[in-house]
Image (cartoon, rainbow, N blue to C red; front, side):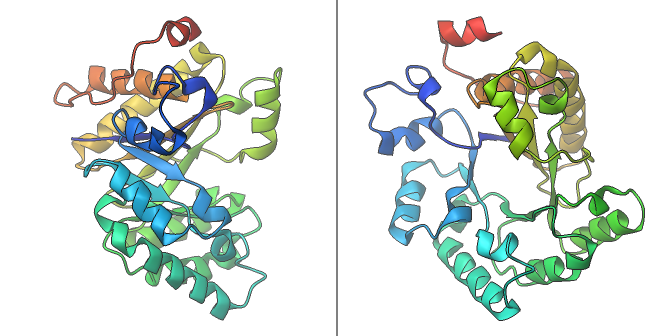
Amino acid sequence: MSIYYGMAQWQHPAWVNWLYPASLPAAERIGRYSQVFSTVEVGSTFYTRVDDTQLLRWYDSVAGDFRFSFKAPQTVSHRLIERPWRDIQQDWFAFMLSLQPLQNKLGPTMLQFPAICDERALETILALCDMWTLSTPLSVEVRNLAYFDKTYTERQFLSALSERNVNRVVMDSRPVFSTQAYCDSLIDAQKKKPRVPCHPVATAKHPVVRFIGHPDLPLNEIWLDQWAAKLSQWLFEGLTPSVFVHSSDNIAAPTLAAILDDKVRALTPSYQKSLVLPQSQEQTNLW
């Protein structure tokens, strides 16, 4: 039984002198991060093509059981409607080619589609899934509300992913929308994060969860309890989830992940807790 816990980044100014010492060069922080967490979202591949040398440098910096979850280029996902299909295919194959040397340390790669991609894009989304050539998992995140209708479109979507052994990314942004935006980080999060229903359905063996926590940590308790129960269920079903924990400013995201793991352990006696954060007086005071 294992859960891969990670953040949306591997370094943050607030994590200095907690997850890694201030003296550690920035280029080496991924190695220290990987001693605490077992996976990470890599968003840089969404925005630009990352040099192969840099990808291999990251690969060599982490242990063999660590897993990278790279985001597919926006030229493939977010410009799906406007670009010629031939160009999209070319970029998709080039991206897969760049990941081939990293397969031993790949978690679910993420195809993340914007709200503009409605049910009419489903055929194209599935065509991209059918082109996936790597032996590692693929996951799909959709943000158009048609895919959350609990009727024909969502059932068709879930069934098609299951047939292809592709994981649905479950976005849980409920916490950051649970109160008014009373601070800068909440204002920013409520502008940028998708407000979609949370449907925790696993369509393959490696379900992906993206949890966006509230900066007032106790307010997250109700949703962390729900996720602990769902993760425990998935573990008993033989699934291997990846859980990426964010918060509105990401400062306390590691703390939220550790709290969630404690809750899973309490519900699942056979589960061996693996996420242990370094002690820090500043972080203790956050809770």
